[in-house]
Length: 262
Image (cartoon, rainbow, N blue to C red; front, side, top):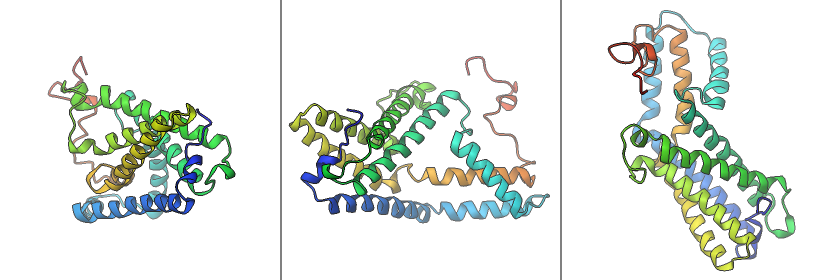
């Protein structure tokens, strides 16, 4: 199963031009959805105005070379290693989903666009990476959904309680899970299950990439910029008059220490 290219058989039913067009459409939906999110919520305007105000009140000037250095640190620390998360479990879960998502999406696009059809078989490592990426998403995503979410772990709410903010993680998990079911059904030669899983997989994937304006999908583009802003604010001392973040143990509560069950 791990070396099965689930997209290879699709060309027998759907011409490769249509599958390639579907990939392009999903990219357009993500870009358009992100731009709509930025314009509708005015997040970019708020972000740059807040950054400008912070730099104006900062007593130490920060040059272009230092900003470039801070950007590199942000990329290698906050982006690549998710160091902004305060707990090890949440950090591991996020890294599993992030790197799994990258492997899953990239290999999907390559197998669909570059190696369409069974006659143009993809290298064996591509479907292997596709399955590994999907399994990483499921491992990190279901771990987060059932055990790490704040409303479940801290507030004791049911893991089956769903709110609008859960649209991204839920659509991602449903899409990837159906993709694995689809691949398994192909390997097991279960034709009826293969057809049903494929249709459900396409619907769930379309919801995932088409619901960007209403989900947290666009946050993955905002978080690195916010992390860079925080580093620049620390460098120009514009944050020096602000209280430390609440997730630091030395300022947690009136006793200035973490509670024992934290």
